[in-house]
Structures are given as structure tokens and as C-alpha cells.
Length: 187
Length: 332
Image (tube, rainbow over all chains, first blue to last red; front, side, top):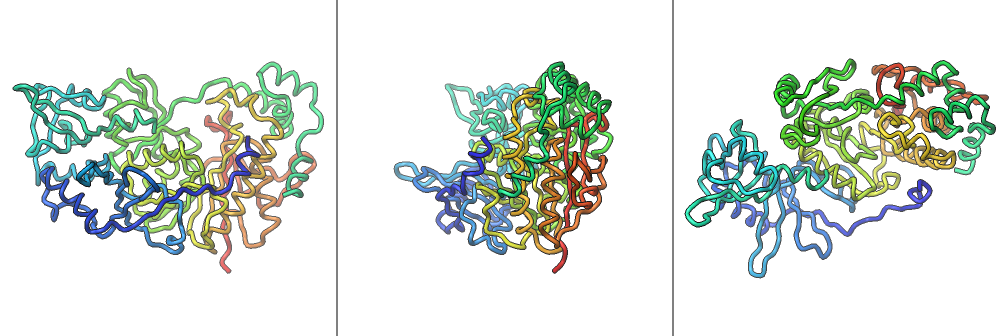
């Protein structure tokens, strides 16, 4: 088995790490505004945004990489990931959209105390949310200023992203992505 | 590599003693392994090793003090029914017992407040003496135990380039670094023997792929799963990776070579052969607990500098078996 491994050469993926274009940055800014953030106050270094493009992929990962430029870095062509993962950009039939990642929730959750109102769940709600299950109204302690928002627990710790939806007359919190993903994904 | 292979084949036992056969039979090992242990440690210590290897390794975690204080983490896990004991020689390590859920499924784990890591594996990174701003290469980085520790010790302000060959393990590496709140890294997927860098990194960590002879307490199947031929192939791979690591290291830089193994063939032999080939290398003494590397093994005499390298032994240190060596590339 090791002989086989030794024979295996550098199998390079067709990947391109590119600085995010204005258009791509704008997609992210639109999402943040929809989630209630004032983009000028958001702790993201816009000049360090990179898009990882895989050949023929349906979506592209967005990262904030603080040290993408070092000696020889321009010759690297097998980058898998790097820096703070913000989320992914994908195309629907008529629009380019952004889906946020968990590290972005952690970065922005600091603003939940001061700048915006986030969704807050109680202990039972936290458990449900971390299993990727819908949280009923009775387990939501505070509903954020926008339907799509960061979800935090009573200690202010980020749990993920969720959307408050109306079902009949009651509201419920639907997870978009939750920390349990790390476990379910097998990382 | 032909010469390396031939030298290596010579140090492997050509015949197996009756004593080794009896012990191998009693404890369920391949006989060639026991023959080597007898040669390394003598009969009494070999018996101690075989006995300790029957006791499963306790579950241990490394607290991520980048996100939470270790004291606070201990309190939170104790509230959930776990009992934590600080590890003797790791400032961030705890052994952990009890609890009603798996230690890999708590909210604290998902929040990145700790990493499940074997005790000896926590130690090599301390030897790197990492500092904020250092450009560091981790050559076999997945699933990210040591990579996350490098970023933890530098408060996410080193510049880490982490490489691994396996796509599946790469996903785990990415998940773990993100989960633990780090962002000062770039991950490259590929064979770390063939990178484009030269004389670039201030620190290089090579936690080399190994036969895993050191982790029998965790994975008893290793008693029989690696043949002498596997051992030779692994050793050659380790030597090639070490050669590449030295080329990536800048003059004056520090390299830590580690492998979760007891084998001389994966430790002293690899280092000694490299030291004999290159004059610009110097081994440095270790600060972590260890027993000195072997200067002699069978009829082979290694480069005298290998005595600066060391080994953690299950029956002495209570950990898994681990080989560590710290090497400096001399200034030009």
C-alpha cells in the first residue's frame, strides 16, 4: 500500500484562487444587508477576499485570506482552502446568490450584542438547532431584526445561520447551516 | 534509494528467536516486531511494553485557549458529567472520563473549544517554538491536530501552509481549523515531496506517515497489520519527505520530525542517513520528556547526533509511542 502511495505524483486539481471581483463582493454585501448588517461596520477585510474556482463547479468558495501573497505563492496551483471561510457564491437561473458559512457566523456574532439583533434560542432550542431541526417559537428567546440572521445561544455563542419563517400563524426558526454540520460532515 | 533500501534491509532481523516467537504468540504480534523490541529494549522492558500496550490509551483532549480559557472549559465539561485530569507534561492537555455523550459530540467540541488528540502527539509542536509571524509548513497536516496547535500557540498569527495528499483527510483538516476559529492558513492538497518552495520556511513540521507501531494501545490491529516490507516502504517515504522538508526550510530554520512509532527504522535510521548525507544539519536537544535516541542498534552504529532525538515510550511516559527529532539547518 505504501509503494502505491509513493508512486502517486502530485495530482493537481484544476483550481484557481482569484481576488474577488467587485461584482462578487457586491453579492456578499447584498446578503449582509439582507441579514441586517451595515456593511461598513462589518469586520471583513474586503481587499483580502478571494474566490476559489474549481473547473465546472456549480459554486465557488469565498475566503478572506490575510497572507495569500508570500514568496512563490503565485506558483501554487493546488490550493484547497485558506483563511476565513465566508461562504459560497452560486448561480440560480436568474441570480447570483451567497450562502454563508459557519466561520462567518462566528466572526459576525460579536455584532449581535451591539449592532444588530440576532435570533436567540434557549437550551432546548439550541439542541434542536444543532441537530439541524426546526426550532418552534416557544424555544426562541429573541427573534432577530431580519428573518435571515445569525443564531446564538443564551451565552451569546454562535450556533449558525437560520431563517425565521411563518407557518400558519406561528413562527419557527429553520436552520440554514448549524455547528452540527461539522459532525455530520465527518470532520 | 537503492542504497537506502539495502542498508535498511540489513538492519531488519534476519532470524527470529524462540523467545520472540513465544512472546509474539502470547500477545498477538508479528514475530519480527518482537524481535526488534527485544533488540531495542531488552527482555524486561519489552515485557513492560507489551503489557502496557494491552491497556487502551485514555481519551485525551487539548483545550483551545484561543477561544476559551482551559479553566472555563474544564468547568463546562464537568457540568456535563465529564471528569478531567490535567496531563503532566502538556499545558493544554487533559485526560477525560465519564459524560453521557461522546466527547466528540458536545456543544463545546462543535464550538471548537477543544481538539481530541493523543497525549504524545501534543508535544512535537512545543519543540517548534512557534512565534507570531513565522512562516510555517506542516507537511502531512491532516486531520489538523498539530496544525491547529501551531495556530493556537501563535494566537492565529503565524502564517501556516498546511499540506496533505488525501482528499478525504483534507476535508477533516479544513473542518477542524475552521471549527477551532483559525484563519491564518492556506491548505494545499498534494504530495508534499513535490512542492515548489525552496529555502523559504522558518519552521517545518513533518509528522511523517508511519507504520503506527506507537499507537497499538489505540489500534490493536497494528500488532499484525504491517509487514517488514511495509516498514521498508514507509521508511523510504519518510526519508524522501525529510529530504524535501530540508529543502523547503530556510538556512537557520528549525524542522521537527515526528512519527507515531517505536521503530528505529522510522526514527534514528532516517535521521542518521540524512545527517550523513548533509553537513548543513544539526540536531538540537529536546525539551519535552523523552528517552534518548539509540546510537547503536544491532550491529549498526548511527550518526552520534541522533542521541539528541528522543522517544516517548508507553511504559515510561504513559503515552503512545512517539519518535521526535529537532533539526536546525545551519546558516549559509
